[in-house]
Structure formats: C-alpha cells, structure tokens
Amino acid sequence: MFSKKTRIVSVRLSDEEFVRLKQACELHGARSLSDLAREAMQRLVESADGNGSHVEGRLRQFDERLSQLQDEVGRLSGRVEELSCKV
Image 1 (cartoon, rainbow, N blue to C red):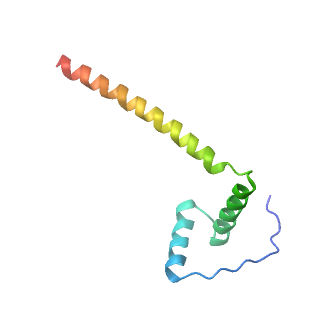
Image 2 (tube, helix red, strand yellow):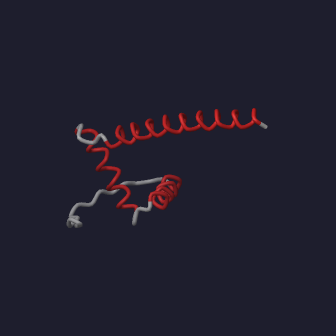
Image 3 (cartoon, one colour):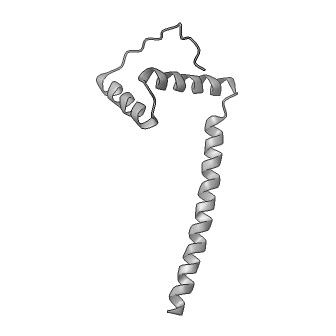
C-alpha cells in the first residue's frame, strides 16, 4: 500500500545528469524519476542506519553464483577435453 507523500525535496541537475537519471529510470523500470530517487534515498538511509545490508547481501549472492559458474565452467571444460581425446 502506498503511503501519502507530503514532503517535497528539490534537486538541481545538469542536462547530462538529468539524461543519465532518465536512462537509469528506464533501466530499473521505475515509474518515475521521483520513485527512483525515493528508492535510492531509502537505500542510502537504511545502509547508514546499519539496517540495510541489501548491497552486502546481493554481493554475497553474486559471489556465490560466480563460484558456482566457475565450478561449472571447470567441469564443462574437463568434459570437452575428455570428449576431444576420444575423437
């Protein structure tokens, strides 16, 4: 459920910053620049409070997945070598 928004924060951007922000909005599927900025600020506040381990958690997931991929590439590489020796 959406809470009523009652406060406004104004930020000045250069033309280049604005274009990049619009691109980020499209890339992340945000409904608006406001939504994207609000989410980014909330993540910043959460991490500053020590409650937001979102980035650390995502990095751990990434690291685990990378290790799995490295293992799989090694396994497949070994299998290719086995098959090429039989030919």
